[in-house]
Amino acid sequence: MYKIVEKEMLAENIYSMDILAPRVAESAQPGQFVIVIVDEEGERLPLTICDYDVEKGTVQIVVQTMGCSTKKLEKKDAGDYLHSFVGPLGVPSEYVHENLEELKKRKMVFVAGGVGTAPTFPQVRWLAEKGIDVDVIVGAKSKDKVILEEKLSKYAKNLYICTDDGSYGFHGMVTAKLKELVEEGKEYDQCIAIGPMIMMKFVSLLTEELNIPTVVSLNPIMVDGTGMCGACRVTVGNETKFACVDGPEFDAHIVDFDEAMQRQGQYKKEECAIKEEI
Image (cartoon, rainbow, N blue to C red; front, side, top):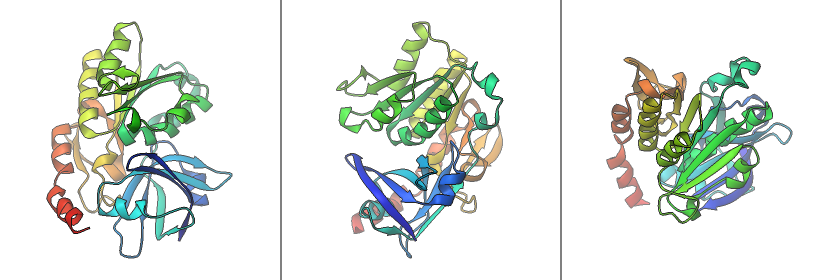
């Protein structure tokens, strides 16, 4: 059993939870995720790690209530317990193992959309703590959907907020902001995009046009987190990969996004039926 030591509402239907899991916190690295099982009858719920504190022994997750399992999780409060909390899982971000001096020469930009802002944070913090400056572009539908702005602002060299409706920051998509920055003279050696599949697809198309190497996190298509269910099977560079065991991060310019998005919606009918029941 794993105790929820803190819970906070970040936006409507979006919550952060700090889970007491010392061994996970001690081993966690940027880019990884955990598997949460809410109760004895719960299903496996893969969630990317938003933050971790080795001294406190806590791991922070961010959940958006959408389906049956996330609604069960949302009902839990500080002081309650989760049945299982397994991790860290997945392959850490490649730069974690790169030469630090070479990494410091790289000009990086992160593009985050919606709850994809959560797994973006530990990467930005890790790089900043190593003395590496990064720009961050965050996209949301409206001002009230922007999350983790204060946390990111402490570590990003430049933080650009974009809203679809123009209620806050830049009025427009994250792709439009990235293109504007490049046209203004910004130069980037690498882009890391994390968010909805459709957002990552169009960021990838743009960065390919701009000749910016790009990494995407395919965590949105993960289901059981072991590779056994096959739900996160995706084609990357004409090879079959599994997002949960081979990733979740891949070279964006060789990911078959259309296939991945089709696979992401394969259980939509069943999920809608469960939503009607609850």
